[in-house]
Length: 299
Image 1 (cartoon, helix red, strand yellow):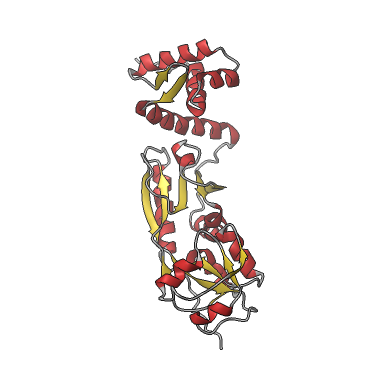
Image 2: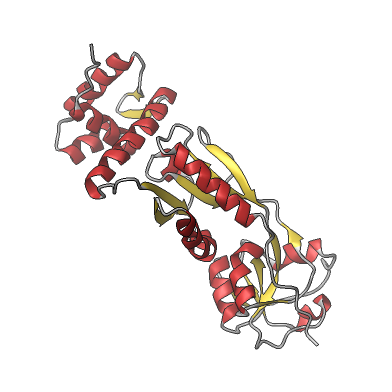
C-alpha cells in the first residue's frame, strides 16, 4: 500500500515556523491562527514519532530532529519550485552554484564558460552568498567559499590553498625592493592587513602607512587597477588580471594563508551525481597555482 503523504498545509506550517522559529510569525505569514499552526506541527510530530520543536512557554526552538527534517524538506521544496519556475529541458541537468562576491566575480565568472563548453548537457545558475546557510536550507546545490570553517551536516572538499602578495597597476611608480614600500602609496583592507604579509616575509619592523583604506578585498583591487596604489591580493582573485596585464605582481615574496577555498554541499542532495563532477573539474583548475604571471621587479 502506498504511503499517504502528509498534508501540504502541515508542511507549509512547519517550514514557516522553522524559518521564523515562531508559531506566531508563521501564523501571520500563512494567515492562520497560532492554534492551527501548532496543531499542524503536532500532527507532523506524531507522524514522524519525534519532536520537531522544543517548546518553552511562548517561545520555540528547532530540535536536532527538526533541523534535519527541515533541511531535507527544503531540498524537496526547492525541486518542486524549480519544476514550476524553470521547466527542465530534456537531457539537461541544472546546477545552482553559490559563492561569495569575490569568488563569483573574480574566479567563477572566468571559469564557468569553460565548464559549459565541456558539459553541454548542464545548465548553471550562479548566486552570491556570504556563507553555507543557503546550502543547508536547500536553496543552492553547492557553495564555493573561502575560509568556510566547519559546516555541520554538509560535505566539504578542499579545492585550493592561497597566497598573498602585492600588486599594482603597471602605470604606478613601482618600488624596486620590499623595503622600499615604506615610501610607496599603500592600499589597506582589514581582511588582509599589510602587517600580515610583512611579518611572513621577514619585514615586521618596516614602518608603513596606508594612503587609502578599502573595506573589502574587491574594493582594494579596484583601487589598485585604477592606479591608486599598491594592495595585497589573493593570487586566485588576480590571476586573470595578471595574465591580461591589468595588474603586475611586485615581488616574489608571498605570505601563505591558512584558509582554503572549499566546496560545500549537502550529501543528501538529489543532485549529488551532478555536483561531484563539477567540484572535481573546479578543483583541477584552481589547484594549478595562484598566479601564472611572473613577479615583476621594477627597474
